[in-house]
Image 1 (cartoon, rainbow, N blue to C red):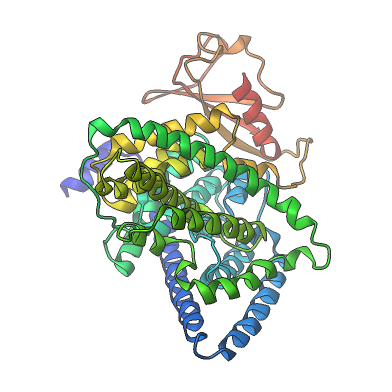
Image 2 (cartoon, helix red, strand yellow):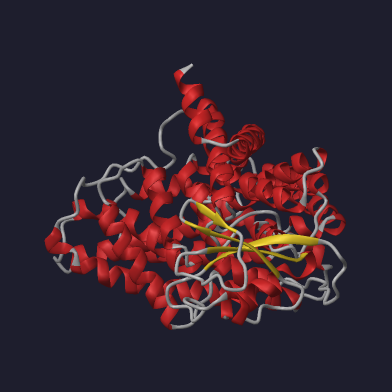
Length: 511
């Protein structure tokens, strides 16, 4: 009774509805993504066992070839019928939230689910997190459409489903919420935050029930990184930033390289990595998959510097081939795996030079995962929170932040853009410059450096067909008139044409 009275006093009905919807989306996302994770793990073990048995029975390889051809044809059919299941799906979610793309949620949901299990579960260097985000967003969209919600609330549930999907993929609810706000939604909206966090927590509860409470990357490492060695974090950040730039450039180049393959249709590009999977699986089955087990093995194994460089090169090249083919699968976990290998490589070099103790290498592996993702994704807050939740240790937030920030700065200095935003920009989407009559809401923050600070609303030339309807200042919601003066930190809410939401957002951000 006391709890209910407190909720009634401090939460209005709209907030309770947002939380309730988020929980429903999260529970369903947890069930779908949890089973998705489980099937991928089962499938990967099946393939690895088959490759090991092939050493004593070569006919198993022939069966593997036949299976690869069947999977290629199934995935080609899926991609032909629904092109937007290709890749991670995060760029599609991002564009969908900007009002530039309309998807058939059911078509995406079942094809991404089955296609993801077939592609990722076969052992290709693809991650489950991107598909999990798209699966969650599809669930959110489906619930919104089935309950006839308006465009604004539909977008909130799509974002909430995305947060729930990432939380379920990695057992990381806080990072899932931050990723949606920092990388996908590109704005801090209280309504989106509240609903997304509710969904992420609910989804994490479901998957924790299925897989247990142990962190996904339970790496044993030195509790505190010594202050006397903090200089190595700066060097590591630069090192990761430069390799992050290389990753960005090569990944964005892959569609052009695959376009040169003229003898097979685009939908069959997945045949290339699936055929290459056979020799790779035969000689190194332990390297198959997104890389979760490899990261854990790096913590205990004593690989040489040369071997680590070879593993990095192999994973880098085959990750590009796998993702560039357009098969359903993400780059999130492969990026973390590459970062872990770079951290171990960097640590080995410092040990050889007698600059650090070998006991510090596990810590560098953890820091490097965050730094490499922060540089490539340009989402440092998500990187810090994600690795903290995945490792299950709060002791090294400071080193994580330093490495992530330095890697981010290096990529930014060389004009590197967030990888998911770059992938979204390369998608060829129909645009509409005409106002169809459908509207949506857009909320943006007035940053301190904006020249709009201190300006009366009536003196500002807002984009065409844009109406400022609300200013949120702290806990107060203001209805603006012409004399209302904007302040730093204000959240300004507009009604905008639905098809022009992205265009209007960019115009106002430039202002």
